Length: 154
Image 1 (spheres, rainbow, N blue to C red):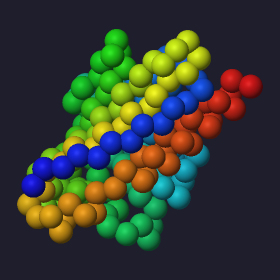
Image 2: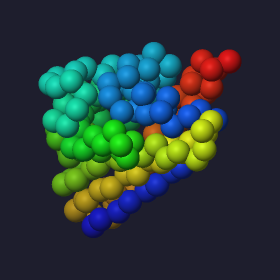
Image 3: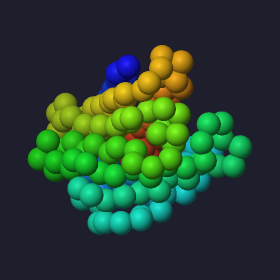
């Protein structure tokens, strides 16, 4: 079974500033600082933020589901402001998923605003397991990063 979830958030921050966070390794660092109850730690396993980079994402103790997963950046396009990462170990793969990919697109709306578009694509063996897929954490991350960048501008 294949599925997809999307979320868009309009932010009053230029696309270049949002991409500065989402395009490399800053996102993991900021999420740990700003939302330690969502993601406890993001460790750089391999790479420099470009294609092939592997991160270990660790969740706080007591988080339902899984304790960690490793993701690899499979696409980073600075011109299109697009990044894709796939889970390569742990996490969703332990629940019967053969693919779990997150795509971030930072879309320029005008000189002072942009859209953070998040897409989750997945393939899983049963519909029951597909029900655990949610965009809520990524929505919260987008809202928190938007607030952080907006306050940083003031």
